[in-house]
Length: 304
Image 1 (cartoon, one colour):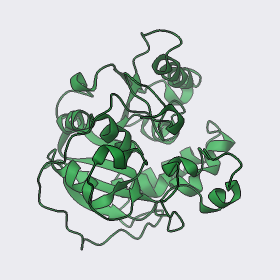
Image 2 (cartoon, helix red, strand yellow):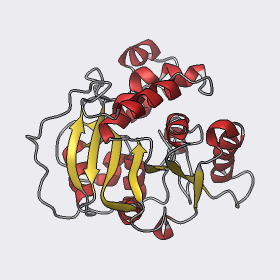
Image 3 (cartoon, one colour):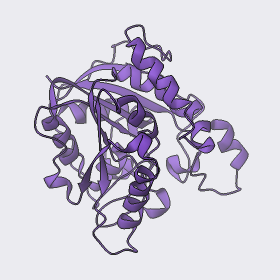
């Protein structure tokens, strides 16, 4: 949990690839049956065959919307918002929770207009009641200002303040259709709070509800020290699947929509050597820009 790595938390706060980390530490993975490594991956097409056509059209409109900055639109080529959300099974009439959206609210820009009329978007945000100059308060206020700055898009977004992950309640039990999180799992593992957050997601979801997880993907292999592994920003896919399944979820699909075979995952500054962080400054900048953003797993779980 390092400020320079853009992770964030409650005791030692910093801004991560998305919103979130708390105190250091890591739970050991619970013993579960290893995931089925033979399960076929989705092709990564922008519009899966079973996607809802109206939702797909609404996503295209939101992605092209004037409410999004040019800088954010440039990152669509790496983040594939339509392919990712349609793979998860997003529909306009769902109640969706976005965990740790980050001060900039990159995916909130896409989700909010799609869900505004027929569904509901619930988001977490840092508790901003602390000292005004704290990292938590500043980034929480940044996100609040983003929502308040465009009521035509964000006026119906419901915000859940996060002060202590152990007491986190996202919504009444069994009322949410989908929970999504983007590039946050490493920070939660590093802080030892992933059980609390995924546990809160499990409680909020309906039976049959979907947990969608996108995460920087490490090379396959065993994890001797989960906290140390998480400090790189990358987690092995099989390990993360097993960990999330230990909280009661069941893996239902994988997509390679956010894969990047150019990412060698062996940088001194971990994933933060790559765009958008580029923490090596001008050193090898062109090389890292040519690689692009990280190789990412895109996983769909269900609550039985």
